[in-house]
Image (cartoon, rainbow, N blue to C red; front, side, top):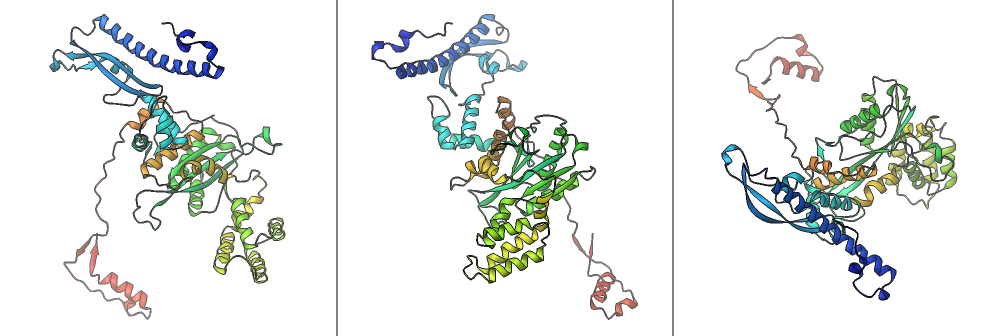
Length: 478
């Protein structure tokens, strides 16, 4: 097959009337049509070769051609292929299309796998509406089609991604590892059960790295070395810590790691994560040191001291000797002697309390091995927030959970493959729950007893009541 286009065929008119841009545009349009025709010709060639081989004659008969239309990443293609009917189905043979079976074209599927991949990629970067219009060449689908694709993926099973974590290198030697944590607040379409903020949910993001790259230390725009992201929707901190622990053991030599710094904004889930990570590494001689990031610290100090740079600089220059009580006195003195202070007393006290509660984490910024300050706000903005919170709209929970994993994989430079799509389309096997028997089920007593004890005459009312309940219970528990 000659795939080189004839210039006269493409231009099909007097070339003197064309500009260079017109020539490029015509060849571009021709190449798209040529691609589609080449695919159709390839499918028909495969079908004809199988028909001529006569391998089907013993078990099937040819029932003629049937037409099939598919939406692909290069546009709509319509092709014909032969349908073979089984002569005797009792022998375990079925009717089939040879081309469909050979190339894995699913029955009743309107979209090809390559089209699904392109729609997923664009919907991950921008939104479903744009992906529906622009992802496929010369073809548009509905926004609902793209939403259904994202919703029907089964990327997560039991709070863990179904695809194994990417390990860029194995057994690297590093003394210090940094883990930065933050979250994006996303909107849900449906109401959550047992939640005050019914349509708001946290998307967790973690960044693991080994500090600034030596190549960019002298540059203003420093790059982080050995970056890897982890994400989850309202993640269980225990499982989140286990995932990162498993990654660290595969990626680095655990016996050479001395320090792991966990930095963030001091949220409860970050404190819980740091505690769980310590439990993971309890058998190793590794120090897990939690640090409050400078962005949130400076933000609170700016509010407490009304943007007074002298007071903020005084705090940082004397951080080594300051303690919580001294900071309270300084902050209170400044507040009382500045009647034009912007904060009301309630907010002021909450900011002071925030810093005092995290004072030991703030002081960890002075650790000699902590050489790379936390930059997680920017990472959350680029990886999650730019897609999930940039517009005032809500997501279905399943769609949001899948989008978070897709965004994290994109940040980790993972290219979507056909195997990924096929894996996510497989149903998740439900684990049968063992029927549990309530431990606090109560049974009426069928006998009575009375025990005389001197302690029952105690002057301590609580002790007396407790002993009385033990010796003369109204109910017995099993």
